[in-house]
Length: 344
Image (cartoon, rainbow, N blue to C red):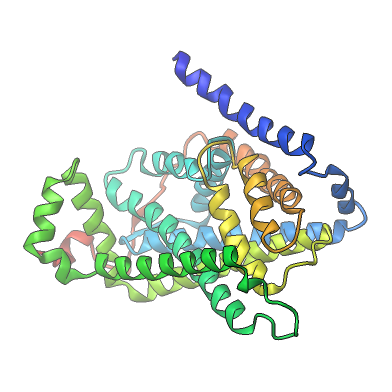
């Protein structure tokens, strides 16, 4: 009990401590935030893009639930997602909300594995499209770097190393994902032997087979992928609008598309609630690679918008959604999962 309360106090204190350190050492200029007032229209546009991206992400999750032969109403998905957003903002990192959402979506349900799997797939699909966008930006930036006669930022050793690392991660994730979704690999004796030796093997096998079920619905998976990519791009448009508010003009479009996914990765590190503090430090370090010293200020504005969305709206949803009846039901247009399972 004492340890749990200590961690609850320590993590917010860590976030505040990082912000204070950045401010005291001159790495954080609060005065530039005054730009929001004369550019309130652009600030509101960025909020609109964040909202649209959140709604697309919710629909992506609904599609992944449907791929498990289950259905969920848009309103129920909205409430459960915003409960997840709320806890993602107040718990360390951004994945804590997924745990809470998994608890609420499976409460009172029988097919818990089929309901948890879409949450896992949703997170992995978001990570994959993040790497895809960043790798695409590396390719574009490397080809067109210096085309205007100026020294290309992509030629810098630190940026080049970071770009190569992202491309390697994208290629590896593509290969691993393809192997993971292979029915032939799933049927192999070696894989079955490895699965049976793992801790909590029964749970792992159920989740694995539930993930493989998405192969029976390629159109749904394609829709989820397109929505994931669209939601990613809208979040970057949101942050780009905030960058315009702060007069950050040293980065081109390719640089933004490369650096913002990395900023999101840093922000997801589970050290402080909602990534506060850690995100500001990470944004600043990454933006410095591209000649801008206002990454921390951009992160703060983005966090404020995220808190407005998640804590403001998500908190209200959490307060008034104590019970969520009829969360899921068998989808009428597809067969039951167990009846069509063809895995050996």
